[in-house]
Image (tube, rainbow, N blue to C red; front, side, top):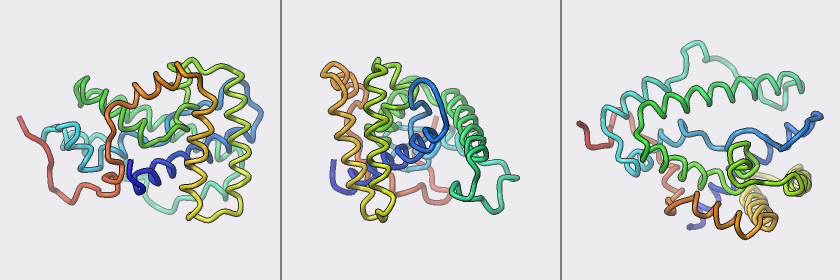
Amino acid sequence: MNRRAAHLSAFAAVLMLTLVASAQDRPRQGRPGGRMGMGSAMLLRAEAVQKELNLTDEQVTNLEQSLAPPRNQGGQRRSSQDMTTEEREKAMEEAAARIAEQEKKIAEILDEKQVARLKQIRLQASGAMAIVSDELAKELSITEEQTGKIRAAMRELRESMRDAGPAAFGEVGEKMNAKVMEILTEDQKAKYKEMLGEPFDLSQLRRRVPGAQRRGGGN
């Protein structure tokens, strides 16, 4: 993975760190929870991902129509920092519901092979912090002890981020990735590596699909 790709993955790890850590501000049982940091809908807007999945023109069109945000979602959006804890929780729940609906639509449009590869790319883009998501925690059999260690590491790195600027995001994310890997067993690390699949050049995610241009073979 080149430096730009590593920084993108690290940024996704920092994003997940912030979201999960904020969820820890309220009393809660069980794992850190939540979904993986980078959504499939976001990834599918990248031309490189469309090409990697060999999407047809019809699939691209269907995705654009199905995943387009509702027109009434325009207007000014409040920063999470300006929200109360209750408002932030509600916003996170609404976002999770939207993502779940998007994932359902995506699974209806893509074939099984495309869905599997998309999941691999999503895992790579989300970084090791995706391991705290409900989905991966279950698949990797993350124990309560490991969950506690991951939470402690997140709290520690969250504190280090308070006075850090954007330039430090990459370093913090890389540290979090490394720390999570230290907490996993060898079997868990091997399974996680297998789940990542073939490496994808994450630096390509910076380039979005231009206008009406289509990528794919067509039927």
